[in-house]
Length: 454
Ligand code: UD1
Ligand code: CA
Image (cartoon, rainbow, N blue to C red; front, side, top):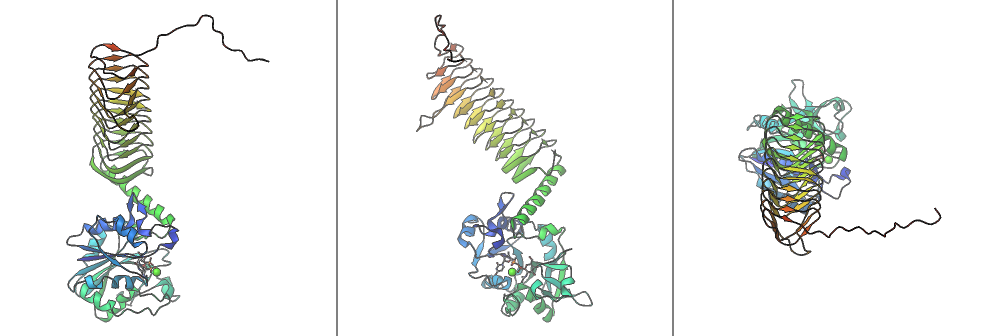
């Protein structure tokens, strides 16, 4: 099987420097969506016809198994498919897809493919209330498809037809190659129309077997930013529905964005509004996620509560932990079970063992923090001298007084206490109070200055 994805068009109505197929839905390029769906079909070789912004398209999708064919000038859909002619074997089943039609479902393609054989051409059509711009499906008195007429070439009565061509079709390689060499551009747009092969197929005695997608949205293309945003919403609502079917409560399915996938989804998760998931995430049972939170490439274990307005990236949040509101977990923040991270706390490349608390206004970077440690408000690990990064180690049960600076490399011993406001530059001994603090004084004769003319 060969799939030819047409992706050479300019997309002028996007008004963009980016080739159209590189615009994204749910964080993935349009072309990637089409590629991913077709790569799920067995024994399928994927050919992409590229043109506009070609190098950019190839670079962006360089990790995919694609046979790239350049269409230097865009002379029509038939001309686009002609570029792949040398790659088509007689006994191939050839499927034609479009790089700017991202939501087509695998099941729709499979249904289409059941209609192809040596004597049939499979065509995906759709009935539209307003088919303006689409090629129309012309049927004879026995309801057999006899040809496709493009909008610009159609007669007034043909324009009344509501059955439209999606452009998606499948046919045997031997036939396709034969017809491709017969295409002409003798039409109103002076383009080589792929749609002309329908009439040739009928002339050669083939039957045109039509099928339809489950929903019209599946075959909608992206031509402008309005359509891009429309399909984004359709896609997101579908994702939301999948989550709800898996036993997850969404406060509003219209206000969640999933730009990636879940490696694991527990039960009875509750997700408030405006939550964004990026990359690969895992959510355990009973996780609660507050409003306006971004979670990227992270593992959130069971019974975790994330309060509103958090940013969590490449982090692990252990069972029963509580994070936020307004917390930021940066890459390699690893919280064990029952850890509390409060407001305006930033954690980077640090492990925090079970039961520890960092509740207010702190920066913890490059640190190893033991269990049941209490880090007071405003504590900062000073991990950077402008050139190098250093580690802070805080052992089990330590208590760090508020507004302390721990100048790394430094170790705070087990059950040690650091007095509030200390700048700690040397290791602090276990079980003892360590503090650096100027003595408090009171000046007896001092007077507050008084404003004149007052
Ligand atoms: C085409 C069909 C029309 C159908 C419509 C569905 C033809 C002649 N017409 O219309 O019947 O209803 O799709 O959307 O096939 N492309 C290339 N190279 C080219 C021309 C196009 O790669 O030279 C690609 C475009 O990037 C796009 C796709 O083919 O992904 C369709 O092209 P577009 O111009 O949007 O389709 P129409 O010709 O309007
Ligand atoms: Ca066109």
